[in-house]
Length: 481
Image (cartoon, rainbow, N blue to C red; front, side):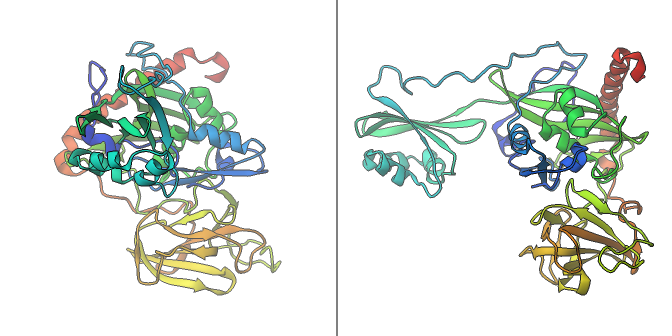
């Protein structure tokens, strides 16, 4: 169970956590559409798309950085390692952020040979790598006889790194990073090899950040000294209550408590968001992360209600709303008054479209002016419609069930349209409702068996949030109060 420790010492994470720590790293999902519409208040010029993967099971975001500096912004978002500010109750500097130590000349000191570092390419295998570098395949066979090493050597991924100490054709030692925590080291021993798995545990440090939006959410995050990944995951936590494509306003504020992941005194990345508050148009939204004894984590309000809803507000991440729900809209093609019974999200062709909620696909195909269209039946006599797709996702077949956040298709310009966008409709008992304002069904609250523990933990986290806010107010210039 994720708890704030009163002594705030680094929490040592066992190796079994390695599969749950990949994170607020970009890669996801990384995925996500035109971020400029939300993060920048300026027209798009050229686009660079990255994918951000959320560590708590939230669907990945596909973010498009528009503008003349798109490539640089996307690169910054994918590799941000900015050091963070400590909580007021912590020392100002917990550990220096320094560059990793250089690789030694040899893996085994005083042994013959030289260091050979190899980056795995697509389609590579150890056999192919040994052949390409003229290494003795008999050494490879001896390595694979070690049961502890075999499972970690057979499967290689593009980008993996192998460090070998070689003497002529012979391999004296080999090192391969298994994951963030474990490293396989093989060293020649007699006629064979000894295999050892070295573990370098991770530790976490509690941090906070706060900001006020004056130009954009992106700029506010930069001023607060936090990564683009953390800002986007903060938006992911509140995505059920706030439409980040249209609702963000100057003066909106945020406070976030989160973990940083460190190893051997080196900052690796941002970790989990533990608690956060977002004030949008004067209304405060708070969320606290809670992990039960089965290891399942989610975010809840201070009262124990899930921040998740049965539906997400927008099925396209960070896209620009080009046309709102409007019963008296002038049709852009027909030039007549015709009700616009949904919301249009302008996004580049090919942008991912997600299912707004769990349900069953009841229609997939061409549907008049809608063009390529998908309709999903949900519980409570609710249906959602997604139109003008360029193409469908293979998994979104008629009769198949889909999960909230699952990709069902891609933005296009099929049907009666003037430009690429998604037309999204939300219907209850066949009656159209405004997707951006309709009250969404709630998800399940915190289970009763965890409620007392949750309330105790959330009280500690909320106290930390309030402390950060008080200190922020104490240092604000008079004109900003």
